[in-house]
Length: 127
Length: 270
Image (cartoon, rainbow over all chains, first blue to last red; front, side, top):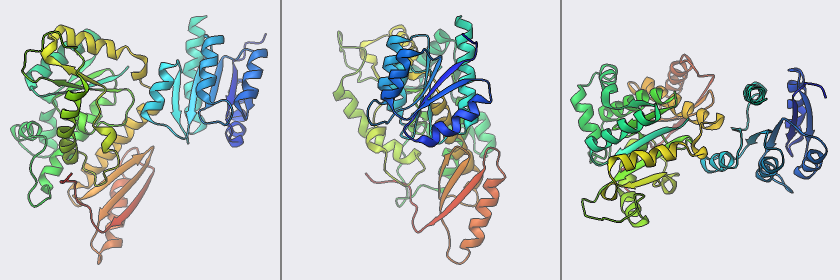
């Protein structure tokens, strides 16, 4: 296993994954993107990811379900919630369910990179 | 780490609980000491600012609050929001519960006391008490929002925690607040920190414009500032340019939009 941090990006807006993937890969991360929650969960059954970046509102499986799944099956992984429908209630719900961070769209790739760096530091400290 | 904002009927009681909570959690305590600085900025005696805070919902003259009153309120808001940008704080006595809104890591606490013997009642107040208090909150919020739209009112009458002081002593209340501060739902996150930064930026812009444009609505989102202002028809373009110039020069501002509006009165009637 290589020591690159494995990141999963789940968003039904293809442009989000398309933009984030090269930006994060340039930082040395291994990135896989998914356009729906179901295929993301299927991939998670095959491979463990260190960080999962997920949108909330998606048709089949939403971001909160992904968060719950990760917490139940891969407690070590960090989940970062991104959403265009940010509210106080939603942010609080995500944190209670164990999200590492919550960020409203639109954001700059640099904003997310900073959060991922924080998550990476925390992951490294725990190991 | 969260910010705890305390609203209490008795200043002394709120201060006692606020200080002890800050001490128990290792947080900073933000109270009326900062009025000295506000007094310098808005050139108003400190005692006058204290009176303004004591009477959070003054009766407006002819439905309009004076320019001076709005200026003082704007200065207080700016100073408080600047202090709260660093989290881990307990804030009391500055009406912050009326303008630090929509920030998920801010715990808004109301301490109520009816002065009755209610032995055996729960520390967290019942819905009836909260409802009774909501009307008062609405009235105060109308004065302090410095905004002309009423969109958020229904949501705004809710606190995160309403504590019944008739049923709890200070150590019990402090314990309750410390418990709330440990709740993960109040943890600071990127979204909530950005919301607080937006409020602080809007407050700074309001103070910057207050002298020349006392009746403005200001909103900030990231580094974009939207100003709605009542402008005279004859010099509208010149005034828009003046506002843009003043705001653009401010730190943290990347883009300014100015929307002239025909009427912009503070909310004074329910």
